[in-house]
Image 1 (cartoon, rainbow, N blue to C red):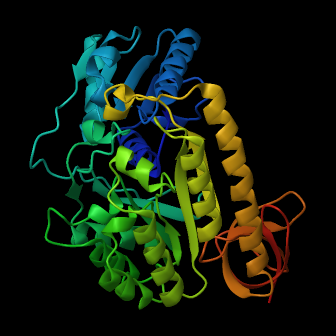
Image 2: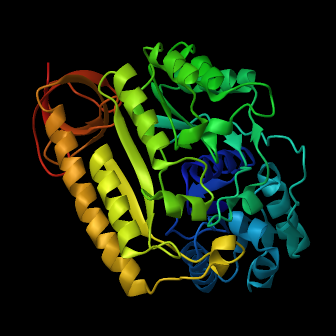
Length: 429
């Protein structure tokens, strides 16, 4: 039998899909692409925005139309956060939530053999353990993502994720070391540690994120270690000093900002001010060699005035981010922000988003210009049709490079000679 997967959302979801796919393969299934015919179709859903829910529903309906006799499986954050809505969707044979992923093969085989519909959405409970999964291969990808943390206790006013993912729980260090050792043996030289609220790693184990990072850096064969998205207020000076002492650590910090206006940060229930955020940025730039700072920003949050927006715009300019993922606020059912007064019209949100995106492009251009003239190690990720390669430096600067004897997966020393709007151009030395 053939199984196909469709994944929405974050790197954690992508990791979990990879782990589930390996379990199906172990059970004798053949993997098919998301556009190919299959006997089983699995959607690993995201519910951060209502748009994500719509994409999930559309994809499920399309697959059912094109494969009327297949078994359709829905898992992930959408059914966990909105179980009644998920159960009501027509044509779904197996419905599970954000947990139970290690039982997905079992539930699917039951649905096939019993020809029955199965709904098993386990509620999150205080003290629940980390659902350990292992991934040994990421296909053609040259870097591996490793989920080490799940859940969030912060309850930002716009976010449904604590409902979908439950409380903080963490992967033990020995399990991290074991998984990374296998990945290193399989040729992966760079890993990215990811989680739902990554800096909360170890809260349930008496550990901190730095312990997991040091563990990853200690694994023989792993040459570069990155961290996923970070909540800025959870990074201590001591943790960052220990990170700076790790030669394998990649100085790329994705610090989620969400707004550059203190009044809006309070409305969002974020736990820092813009000045505190700026102090963290200054500390990073003082203690790491050529770091990059990237971020996410929500535009048009309820109550955001033009003055608030201009403060946010000015803050982006002041920080000088290497990259900004900006997007209009999306009203999310089940969150406090959905009921806040001052909901803005779509046209206002879209117009502000365009202005912020333009400023973000200027910041990115300035950052790329700063990289010109440097000599950096580049992990080659893909070969282009003209024979050149694309890859990333340790601080995640995108680079296009030409040279003799190059191959995907290599880490090569490269001189960055010039830059375009999107990347640096370099030559292997």
